[in-house]
Each structure stands twice: as structure tokens, then as C-alpha cells.
Length: 273
Length: 294
Image 1 (tube, rainbow over the protein chains, first blue to last red):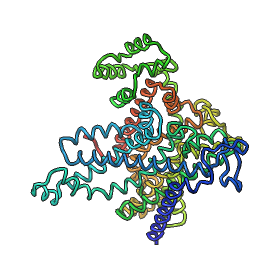
Image 2 (spheres, rainbow over the protein chains, first blue to last red):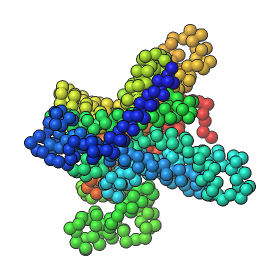
Image 3 (cartoon, helix red, strand yellow):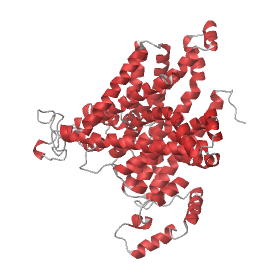
Image 4 (cartoon, chains in turn brown, orange):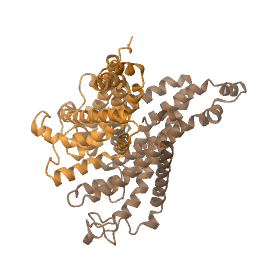
């Protein structure tokens, strides 16, 4: 019974995420207003027929900014996870397969793991300056150690498998063995980890934007909208609440989806993390 | 140390120009370059940097012109206070919820707690803080909006620490409760628990002395790892509540391009994170005498 409920919950989460992606992608079509259109006579309005989610401190439509902002927020979270996944898998493959590189690569990974993700990202921002692309890179590099370690452990166990030894014996090159034989077998747990990591990357990216290191005004982005609404918390709490609820729903959906994928692939971990 | 050194030199442009400012004269920039040793080979600079750190010199803050060590010592106390308070209430709450959930596994209460834990995992930290301010500070005037009121053992200090600590700890409750539930559930099926109950020991004794102690290792491991997330969360919490801790100082440092200050803070927090995880490793031997380090 609980399995059926969990599958249904996972399905609902997946559908919600697909709807979010579709709606934010179609923002230029669906948004009722230009997200940068200022109308000072209608600032800090609550819900109305013209502005379903109200207006912000400059009279800009909150719904339109939410839709356009979602494109940036979701893209940053996805890209950051992708950067972490690609770089981490590459490091993990090389580290797990080539013994000579293992020590050096794992020490580099240890250095990155020793620093909390947000601080690691802040260090990169301090060096490279603020900006959306820099946040992607900063959060992505923070994700690298997790993917690298997971890939490495999987490669270490696969390296001595018979099919790999057979490929060696047949004269296959190392890169061919890695690409054709090892990588397809390590992908499932990596993808599960990626789905569990994506909400963390999204939250980290939003936090960095909230702190002022992401998009600069007047660009719409969920973290920046929350920062902008903070100054008007007393008279217009919904300015910060609406993008926060959006972030919460998306992050929870990714968490549920990740849980579902993990339970499907490895029921031993059901209900633990 | 290598990482924090590398970050400074990764930044585009001339570091001396960045520190001196765009209006500085070429002579000033050159003098600053000599003072910071930027004309020396990179390896010499790195060795010198390590030597400085080992002698306790983290340089001078660009903004305040005070030693970075002084700025860190000024801000480390409030951060420590916030993290301890946040972690303290969150761990206590999470362990109790996890145990209750494990004891009532499969019931409505168990599901409610686990759903709550998942919600807590997904909550943006800044939203929790802003909502607490809106509801309890602006709405009911129960707590101050911002600021540090002093050490936590003073009434004013406790009053000011309450909301930031609740904000910081809120996202920790979920993961700790889930792990506690999973490990306690596993332990409750062990033979020694059955033996303890058969001996007639009080249920509270069985749970808190036998079950919890044997579940402690994974929980302590998680807490060590979560400390890193907490430090990241402290940056956000301190910014929301204008708390004069290291996180807020680091954010101000980045916004003002105060590289030495940011470097020093990142180094300090990283060393704290490593020390906490070393402490966690040492705690294993105390919690579980079967674990011994040779």
C-alpha cells in the first residue's frame, strides 16, 4: 500500500515539475505583462483582477516576474547540477580507473569537501565576481566532490569485473572501456544522486541570489525577488512569500522525485535519507 | 590554505588595483604590490602565505584597516552562539521526533512526522526567517527584528538569539529526525533490546539508554556533515537578522572586495568544519567502545 502511495506521490511530483518547466519556458507567451514594466501608481498592490499575484515596489506584475524568474532559477539549479555531475563523473572515472591519478585527484576532492558548499561558492564569487554564470560554476564545483566520490567507488568495484577484464584481453583501449563498459554501469546511482542533489543546488543558487551575488536588478529571479520583498516585509509580506512558496514547492517535488527514484533502484535506502 | 590562497589569485585583474581602488595612483598601487609581495614568484608568495598563517597573521582588512584576526575574533563569538543555539534545539527536537516516529512506526503520527521532516528539508531558510520576523516581530512584537543582544546567558542575549536560532535550526530537524527514525527502527529489532524488555527495564530506559546509544553513531556522523550546511545557513541567517557574525562579515567583505577578510573567514570556517569532523571521529570511540583507533 505504501509503495503505491509513494509511486503516486512520485508521479505527482514529476507532473508538477514538468508543468513548472513548461510554464516557465512558455513565460513569454503566458505572462500577462512585461516583467520589467513599471507602473508606480499601482505599487505594492494585493491580488486583483489585473494582477493576479499583485505588484511589487515598482508596480511590476508579480506573476509575470515569477514566470520569467523561474526560467533563471530552474536553469541555474539544473546547470549547476549538470556541471557538478559532468566534472565529478570525469574525475571519478579517472580516479577510480587510473591508479596513478587516484591519489592526486582524491586529495583535490578532499580539499573541496573540507569547505562547506555555500562558503565554497562564496569564495568563487569573491574571486570571480557576482553573476548568474558564476553562481552556476560555483555551485557546480561544490557538487563535484559528491559525484566524484560516488563514481569512483562504483568504478573501483567494476574495474575488476570479468567483462572489463575481457575487454582488456580483447585489446580495447582504456577510454573505450570507460565509455562503453564502465560508464553505462555507473550511471543509475549517479542519476539518482543527481536528482537528490538538484534541489540542494537550486536552494544554494537561490541563497546566493538572495545574498545579492546572482542576477542584478531589474532582472527577475526568485532569490532576487525575495531580497527585494524583504524591505517591504511589514506592508507587503506576499512579495517575499510568493517566490518562497514557488521555491519550496519545486524543491519538495525534486526531493520526492529523488526519493522515488532511489526507492525504485535501491529499496534498502527507503525512508532513510 | 592552498585553496584560499588560490582563490585570491584566481580573481581577474590586478589584486593591488582591486584593493587600492580604481582612483589610486600608479605609485600607490606599486607600493601596495611591494607591501603585499605580489611582485614575487607565485611559489614564494604561497610559502610566505603559509608562514603568515602559521604565525597567526591573516593580513589586514581592506575596509577597516584592522588585522583580519581581530575582525574574526570580534565576529566568531556571535556565530558560535548562533550555531550552538540553532543546533542545540534542532538536535533535541529531531531526536525526540525520530524516536517517537520509530516507536509508532506505520501510524498516522509516524507519517505526519516524516512528512513534516520532508517539508523541513525543502523549506528555504530565508523564508523561515522572514516569516518569523513578520509574524513574531512585526505582528506580535514578541521578539526583536535584528541585532545581537549580547551573550546567550543574558536575558537580552537570549531574547535576540531566539528567532535566528530557530531559523538556523529549522532545516536541520528534518534530516536528523529521518536518520534517527531509521537507525532506532533498526536497533529496536535487536536481541539486546528484547532482552532489556524481558528483564523488566522501564521502556524509557530501554529507548534512551540502550536503543539511542546504539543508534548514535550514524546520527553523530550526520551532525558532523550537517555542520557544514549550518555554517552556510549561518551566512543567510546572519544577513537576515543583521547578526554580527562571520557569515555576515564575509558577505560584506565580498560586496566590498575585501579579499584578505574573506580569505581569513573562509579559512577559519573550513578549519572549524575539519575540527568538528575530527571530533566526530573521536566521539565514535566514546559512543561505541568497539571502535578503536590504533
